[in-house]
Image (spheres, rainbow, N blue to C red):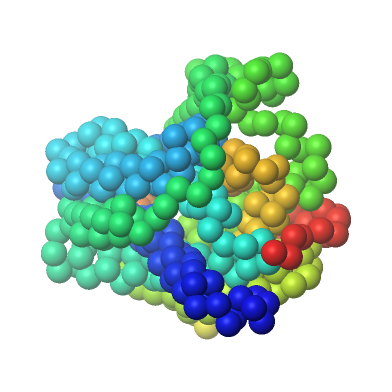
Length: 487
């Protein structure tokens, strides 16, 4: 700010008002991130009780998580495009409303099938929130401060994850499983009211046609692949499962061909011409594919091999979330000053180190090893996400923040949903398939012999995760030097 601006009362007032708006807008975005993070961890803890109360089976309960992730994956880019067309704030607030409605419906579900269906509704709301939150930050915060802003969102995610663990344990133990969904009602209404009152549209509307064939190919392909993987985990391979897998992979191959000629593609392959942007979104894909499953595998180890409850097992991961939340804003500011390449790559390197630490787990390992590895992993996440996200938004074409944000979320969600399926598949390769589901849902414990076998399978899955994240690190370091705007 110039000396003249500093001495002009009107300009000072305008600058103060702008700072207040940015702060309040970040609070709204943090609320959205937090509520989705709460939902991620709290639902995992509630799966065993929900299966018993709703008289469902293990495969059905696994789809309580898979359905939500699949909807996020299918709709993120299109709902980010809705933000470009109809207003990001409007779509973000609509997402809060739909997510809250879906949460209430989930709490009222009378069967496992209903719960999965209502999770689809919840997923649509979550996609509206996540696909537009990054674009709102890009509209609100100057380029030189976006890394710090994305770092602050990591606080919301980590606080939400910790709250999900703590509240989930209390609610499931002392109240009723339905309140793990009902708790989103007051949070969602508060976030909706705050967003409606605070957020302002700051970008011009741009008409963008939808790519419904692309959505169908992506959704159908992923659905068939995931059905094949989950069925294989529970019942082994058969001709029907193999056909599902082949048809699903064929649809995903068809998606790539369709996107090359589509007038308004679901995945804008033209964005991949930009070296920094393409390396950033592909690094996010590999990172999520490698790392998302690790939390579930470690919880399976703690429950099935060490005999801990889901709540007690999750508590061991809390220090990693807490420290990650504290480091995130600092790592984001570092990315603002030097670009994303170094801090994001350091974060991925820390994650590889954490997974290597996990490969030292045995049936008798001290639980301090789990805590230490989770802390290293949490710090790695804190370095990677704000840096990488800011790189995507800083290098997105002007007027396409929603599309770029949706592309990032889509590829990240593809990695997450595939990682989840691969985690169960890895576990079922080392122990009886039905036992893998039982351990994951916290309703069974392994014998010493099966426990040792599962640890061997865990090590193989962790080595795969290390390889995927290491490939993400190579992409990250090769993304090139950014030319970030400084205004």
